[in-house]
Figure 1 (tube, rainbow, N blue to C red):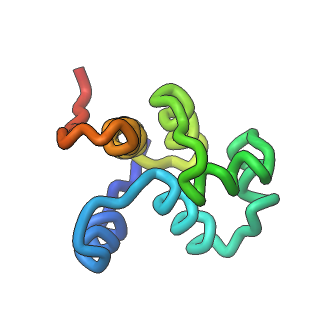
Figure 2 (figure 1 turned 90 degrees about the vertical axis):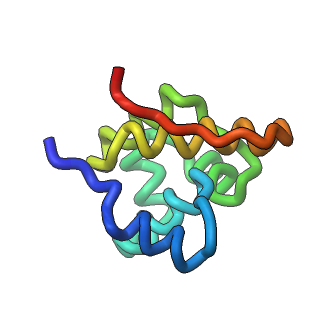
Figure 3 (figure 1 turned 60 degrees about the horizontal axis):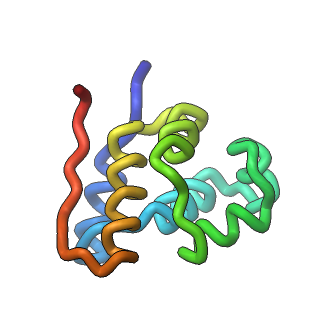
Length: 103
C-alpha cells in the first residue's frame, strides 16, 4: 500500500517553521480534500464534535486511534503515531523529540 508522508508534510513543516501537531495535520488534510468536518468525521468514524476537539487541540488521540486514522486516510501510520506521541510529550511539557519507525 502506498502511503503519504509526503512532500506536503515536509513543505508544511518548512512553512510553519517547525513540527506540526496531529490536529493541524488532520485539519489540513480535510481542507485539502475540500470536506466538511461532518463528512471527514464520518470517514474517520468519529463525531463532528470530537473531530473539532482534535483539530483545535482540545483532545489528543491515542497512538492506536492515530494509526487507525492513518489507515483509513492512506497516510503513513508512523507519521500519525509520531505526531500524536509528540503532542502527548508537548502537553506534558517534556522537552523530548519522538521518532517512530517500524519494528
